[in-house]
Image (tube, rainbow, N blue to C red; front, side):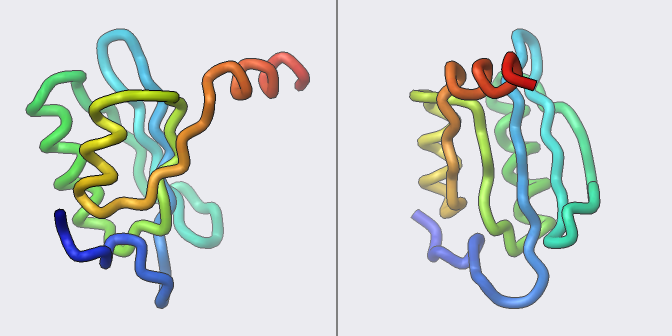
Length: 100
């Protein structure tokens, strides 16, 4: 496990949202001002996970990652990589969207 420096609370931070898809995952990164910094997709295989971690490490410090998931190996691995994870239950997300 890496030293927990990915979510350091000093200076400018970046915040990440990951949306699971059937063939790829959409990733958006915003800064503390909520301005979109980068948006990209990664594949659902090991190469995609490696690319995701590399891109996130290039944007350190990451304040947190919001991800729609209840249980998932990728969520566990991101946590093991030292990232702060904010899992969102898909049912809550759906109810929120339906209420708009």
